[in-house]
Amino acid sequence: MSEQLEKRAAGAGRPASGTAGAEQLRKDALALDAEDALASARELFTLDEGVYLDGNSLGALPRQVPLRMADVIGREWGELRIRSWDESGWWTAPERIGDRIAPLVGAAPGQIVVGDSTSVNVFKALVGAVRLADAGQGPGGAPGAGDGSVRDEIVVDVSTFPTDGYIAQSAARLTGRRLVPVEPGDVPAAVGPRTAAVLVNHVDFRTGRLHDLPGITAAVRAAGAISVWDLCHSAGALPVGLDAHGVDLAVGCTYKYLNGGPGAPAYLYVAARHQAGFDSPLPGWNSHADPFGMTPGYAPADGAARGRVGTPDILSMLALESALDVWDGVSIDAVRAKSLALTDFFLECVRAYVPEGLVTSLTPEEHGQRGSQVALRCADAPAVMKELIARGVVGDLRRPDVLRFGFTPLYVGFADAERAARVLAEVLADVPAAPTR
Ligand SMILES: *Cc1c(COP(=O)(O)O)cnc(C)c1O
Image (tube, rainbow, N blue to C red):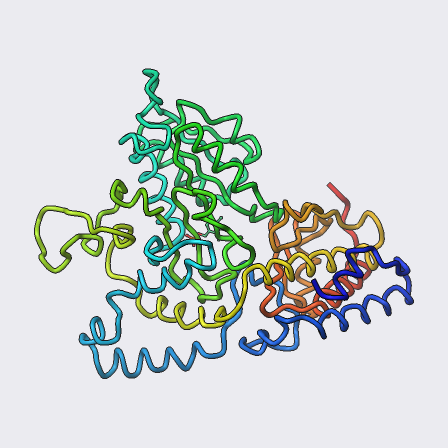
């Protein structure tokens, strides 16, 4: 830990508010930025003078991507045309790029395939999980753990990102299961011999709460069910440890903390031990063992390729591949340490600058329960966010009353956090308060 962070962790005193407090916080921000080992990564991105705190919705553009895309479009597509499927490595891109994402989420190679949207991958994973449970592939053994009961339930995170919930409902209908919505913290108590599969978001998109992946995964495994984790708000922001914690299946998007670009393809992780039994509900020709055999009968490919469906979206996929270069030599533990320091510092600045009672943080104080964003509940949030953006601080809004600020350690610094809190206080002083609900 850096000297500044140690001092802060030890609670080095400073005036809590007023001009002297603001001056001190500004000085602290500069000192923290000066000794931040990740600070230089910001130069890898195309940014402006503003403070961009929406990388948890759309990551910033890595500088090298436009050059790479000019080559992909001009030469690989424009000149090589059909030859690029082989010669430019287009055909194998989904697995190759999956292996680039793997170290960021703690997965050994060969278990991640890139393609389709997160929503589509949630569907593949959840129906695939139920089929694994039916086949007795759950660690607890046969369906119903051998006691005659049937695994007729799918447990889903009640606070989930909506798309996961909608797809879970459809997956439950298709597989003849009952959906059991529970708070992630209540999953261990909710799972049992009737549970087929469990779908949980690693970090809550609204509040930024980090859920207990190791503990919940262990409870799901002990119940003989299959775990499916959605990593949209954790991959690229904090260590995930898919292999180490024995996760069964996982999905995630690449346009948030992984900076893959708007609509960049998502990914699907199928743990090696489940690959042979993974029975995709979307068996397209790209996941066939012999795709160019063009046979009427389906025979699934081995390995991660089994999670593919149809022709990959090569342009978006290769933009993502280029974007992943920014992670070369970056330790995800260092990213996590900076993310926590940034969100701590932002909250400290908010407490110092914003008069008591105007905003309430929904983001857990405890590091073990915090993702990489801060969510503040605030009256008249839409008007406040609009004005924040007009003044160069870009966060986003989750209706009706939540201001979201995402902290992406590769390109957000401590001075940004201080400035965001200061501008927030100014906006709150200027925007006429609406009556609170
Ligand atoms: C962003 C996000 C999604 C997005 O799904 P798409 O299919 O890419 O639109 C899904 N789940 C969670 C938890 C998310 O945060």
